[in-house]
Image (cartoon, helix red, strand yellow):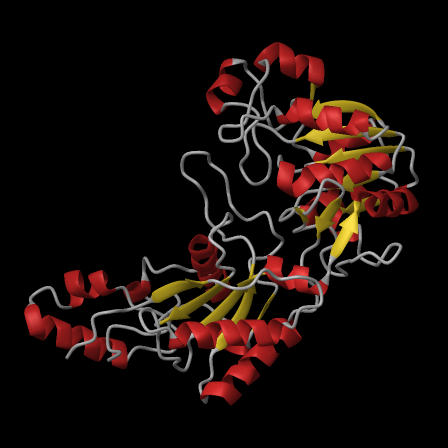
Length: 399
């Protein structure tokens, strides 16, 4: 019988992970137990994919830092006086607790917010209102007073939070003076402070280059804070505070570090247990954009901080509707099916630039699979931090 099911993504329920848990054993046991289930079980196959959230990896590593740890690192690296803090994302979970630590490590914070939205699409200002007021986001620098005069009090579409007021209050409560400006040119901050912490994620290299070229003194990114342990804290040598999340009112869970050994060991253990070579990855945020709130999900520095070798690369796929509408437009039924299958079998190893691949998704496998995993596991109470994917590398010819 012809196979009717293609890709299947399963969220697997796992124990609550604590520091120092053996994640290799837990993940392997969870997958094997799920496979043995009488109703929802499955057969482990070569090139299946096991993915686990970055959160459980960081939890198992005990990779946490406190507000006091962040404050000490900021003070040591930026001097503890007036600090420009620019381009943070607007998030209670992602940035607010980091801001508390940053502010506690300074006497004054000049906070520069990008507009009309932050880097990942959280809006402070409606585009139409900005146009109506004649504001040019490429050159206009607004004070807090001017912002309020023009745009009033704006709350986030989904959270209902006025992030301008919220961040201002956090800084004051952390013991620092605060001044807020709105500008999209990072160099605007240098009129207010020469020591700058830029908090952007995916544009951080350009921001650093511009600030240094414009004469800033100490210029650091969020990826350069908490790169080493402070008072026994966790750390991330590569990403610092990027990718961190609120853990408690006084601590953040950092992005996991040194994950490659973990994914390789799980792959090896699954091979020993089943005789099948599965792929393994750690994933964080997916890389997709919400069409209503305009929010781009990717607040982590990367979708996948570690993955096995079989997940390197991009898809190499033919567009079936292109073949059906062009090369085989005169065929239908079994003849069309057989012709398309034959075309898939003989396709080139590299279809980049070929019309037959037009419309396929030109993204890295880890970004595509990570997005699928993020949507499968969710971010709430599903309790499925491990995702098991089958059939991802199959195509129309696979039986």
